[in-house]
Each structure stands twice: as C-alpha cells, then as structure tokens.
Image (tube, rainbow, N blue to C red):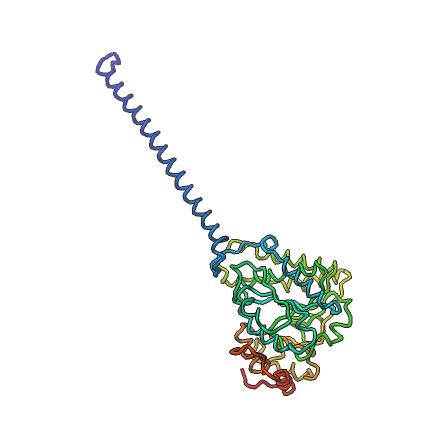
Length: 387
C-alpha cells in the first residue's frame, strides 16, 4: 500500500483520531467505574458502622434475642458496686464466717420471694445475703420485706431476662456469674453460692459442718454422687474460701469459659442452643487435677442425706428416686436442692406439689406456718400430688 497516497494518509489520521477518542472515553469510563466502586464501598462501611452503633448503643435500651454478644465480659462489665455492697454485708456481720451470694434473673423472681419467705425467721440468713438481680427483678424486689441486700447486676442490658437452658444467652449469663464471684473472692470475702429454688428446712448458720471449720477451700453438695466419692460439686450450694489457690482456680475457670464462648463473640442469635461444657465442669476438672498433682487444696463433700441434690424429689430427669428418700432420714435434712429438672415453671410446680412453696403470688405475702408443712411432707416422703 502506498503510504504517500494522500487518501491513505487521511485514512490513517482518521483512525488515529478515533483511537485517541476511544482512549479518552475509556479513561472516563474507568474513572466512572472507580468512583462508583468507591461510593459503594463508602455506603457499605457507613451502614456497618451505623449498625454497630445501634447494636451496642441505643439498641441496649430495649434488649432482645437479636442482640450481639461482644464478650469478653472482663472488659465489658463493672462489678465494682457489687463488690462494694458485698463488703458492706461483711461489715454488718463480722462474726459470720461467710456471706450468701445469689444471682438471679426475672424468670426466677417468684422463687426468690418464696426463698425469702422460707428463710425469713432463720437468724442471720437475710442479713448475710447479697442478692444480685437484673433490672426488672430489682424493680420487683426492692420493696419486698427483707433484710437481704439487693443490688442490680452489672449484666449488659441485652443479656438481661430469662434464657432457655443451654442457649447462648444462658451460657453468657453464667459467664457473668463466674466473673462476679471471682471479683468478690479476690476482695478476700468468703462466700456461699446459693440458689432460690432450694428448700431450707434448717438454718445453715447453725450447722457445724458448714460453719465450724473454715479451713476447707471448697465445701459443697455433690450434683452427681449420692454416696461415696466427692463427684461433681454443684454451684447451687457451694461454700468457697477466699485464698490464693481459689483465686488461681477461679481464674482458670474464667479463662476456659471465655475460650469456649469466643466463637460466638459476634453472634446475634442468643436464643440458639449451643453445645458448651460450662463453668462447673471446668471448675471440677481443674481442682481435681490440682489435687491429684499434690497441690494444697482442701475440698469436702457435704452429706448427701443432709444436703441432697434434686434427685431426692420426684418428677425430674430421674423420675422418682424413692430409694434416695428412703435411705435418708427426713429428720437429718437441712437443704434440698431443686435441680435435676429443667425449666423454672417445672421447678415451681414441683415445689408446690411438695408443699415447699412459701409465698402467696397474688399478695406477695409469706404463707403462714409453711415451714412446718414443708417438713411434714419430707417426713411422709410423699408429695401432695403426683407429677
């Protein structure tokens, strides 16, 4: 082809001109696409930040199961007020070897009332009790007739309320209890973990196996064994001595619980049931490991007849363990736990069937002579009605 031909040169110039125009338009297109992607990215980032602010700020004013878990609780909660009130309880009762610590949510508030009526006439029980409750429970209980010290829990708003057993919300609230108890112990305060669904037939401050010897680090009832070895000490009724070895054990339990729940750190579904070992398993495994290794740790199991677990009752996971009741004289009973049954409503129903319910739920008044009636069904070893 002859490039000197004027027509050809004009054709080349025309092609180059179109090519430069195409390049210019391509640059504009790339710039437009780049601006578009930058705008899209900025918009997504804005909504993510906004959602997080809503989730962890204003949303906490109205918590629900869709809230997100942001634990480690060590950084999130302030248990200072609880520890301060624990010290005040100790100061009011300097002669008492330990205080009673109970942490509950609104789903257990009726059982708290029943327990307060159950123990109302037992000297030193209420004055030695630190009752740690969520906000709704505090509003319900603040005017209840009791000498117990009631304090609002440091539990985050989105975790307050009742959670189904083994749900993520349930495990996170148990993690909170571990943290609170650890802080009280590290303040040098001996304590007894108790729960409101238990029936107290005698005053524990009058029992030598609980108050006469404070050398043991842990004293409690077995949640698994009814005789023989110590087995699995439950947190429903456990005396804990403030000491360096206990601090070490408790720190281990806090660490293990945190590690177990770490995969759910940003999970919004707090109602989902998850497979978790829980703080009590880690506690029992670790103190036994230390004990086997020769550590100076003293643990004592209370008599399974004086302080039976919930297998003493009928209508639970073990159905009716009549042999347990038959083997334990009713006159020896001090405190009966109401575990081995799932659900607060079922717990209350069982207590009422055994005449172990102490409050009128309509009037909020304590039922008269109810402790005598409760002791009578124990002596008879039969409930008022079957499950």
